[in-house]
Length: 113
Length: 115
Picture 1: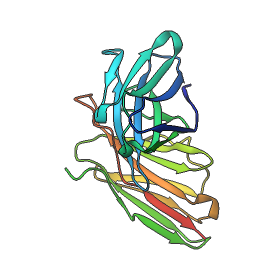
Picture 2 (picture 1 turned 180 degrees about the vertical axis):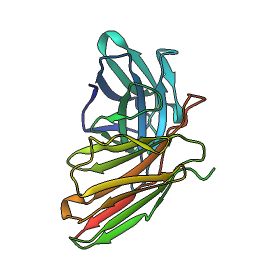
Picture 3 (picture 1 turned 120 degrees about the horizontal axis):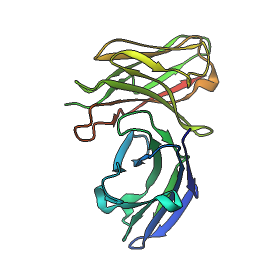
């Protein structure tokens, strides 16, 4: 069985500050890990994915995430927050890069001017 | 490609009525997924298909829910009879194997309200 825990249902940062969204996973097999972003009343958009090629993964909009097997973590970061980053972010785990996803509960990111 | 297309975008129905949600996956994708998003339960997988065959329907809440995929370009999720607790956003997604680049794509969702 696989599961994902996102620490912090709400994160608030100032514009220009570091964004750190935490994700820990549990998986009995080598995992595939994903971060998705959801803007209000929209679908889910892929930010980045980890598929065992490299532990530091760069995604769209300046986001990146680092896979740490020893910590079973896949935290999402962005050096400088922008107002347009305000959204809900979901971490997800899968046994493959194309199969069913198990999602975390989501983290709402608020960016203050 | 137009992406994964879901219809309708919004659906309001009365309790007890039948509701049908529709999904057109990306052409060539061989996996199709139905997810449900609620405040209480977050995003959860209901059912998924591979080459039009249901593989795992363990997430389907109860017998009131059914899903079909009659061909590679169309799937439906039906709720009969609908109940207020079915109110949620329902997402369809499709993906491609073997992995030739990342093809896992979500539709824009159908917001269902049962009154």
